[in-house]
Every structure is written in structure tokens, then in C-alpha cells.
Length: 168
Image 1 (tube, rainbow, N blue to C red):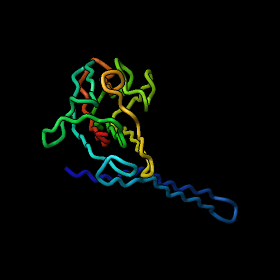
Image 2 (tube, rainbow, N blue to C red):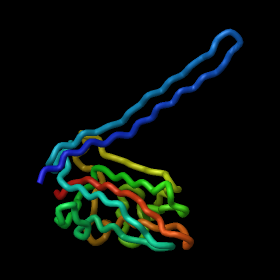
Image 3 (cartoon, rainbow, N blue to C red):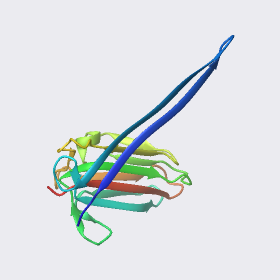
Image 4 (cartoon, helix red, strand yellow):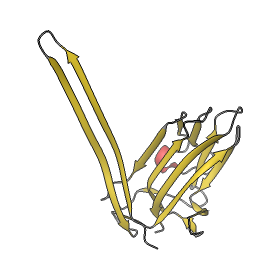
């Protein structure tokens, strides 16, 4: 199965300031991007998982990056390296989605105790550059769990997740 991926994060900012005789303008347009072909070397990935998931009030789930998640074709995925991760909390959520920490945490991105809090409508993403052969290592059984938590007990939360990486 071939996996071809494109990742991008962009920022566009326009600022103006009215002066006595002129209006000054500053415009920023910046994009960071990587294209990955199919494979397991630098500039490549061969595994992809994506899903919309829902957690009930106060619930948590462990996304096991080594042997539990399945792709859209039903193939069980075992990541050795992650090259890209994007998570977005639904705008309709009342509670936050918290990502990271837990037991046997996948620590190469957030360390063993780090978390990211996604407020309703928020998203985060990262990707390894096309020249990066390593990405973010996954250690089966001891460093392969990406924990996702509903921050409160009032309502369920929904989030989207995309994980792209390598089997070797």
C-alpha cells in the first residue's frame, strides 16, 4: 500500500498603523511544509491513521501507536517513527481535549509528562521535515501511548486525529 503525504502549517498576518501623514502596513505570509513519498526513509512514510473520535464525559483513551490502531483498510498499524500528527478539537465541544502524558507515554514529542490542551475549536499539528529520516521514535510497549482525555465531566468531546509515520 502506498502512502503519499503533504503537511503544511501557515500564518498570514496583516497589521496597519495610522500615522500623521501615512498609514504603515506590515504583511506576513509564512508557510512551513513537507511532502513525503511512500517508504520508510527520509522524506517518506508508509503508515496512515485518521479518525473522528468521541470521548464521553471525563473519559480517556490510549491511542497505541504500536499494534492497536487500524487504517481505513483494516490493517493493524505499528509505527516505529511518527512523521506527522494533527489533532483538532470540535468547535461544538464544551470541554477541552487534553493530549499527552499517561502510562507508557509516547515521549519523543511531549516528554513523559507533557500535555497539550485543545480548547473547543483549537487544533495542533507537527511534522518532521522532508529531510528528516528519524521523525519521532515510537518504542513498542514502553513508549507508544498517545493519551487523549476529556477535561471535564459535563459533556462528551469529539476530536479529529491524523497520524502518519513509518513501519521501520
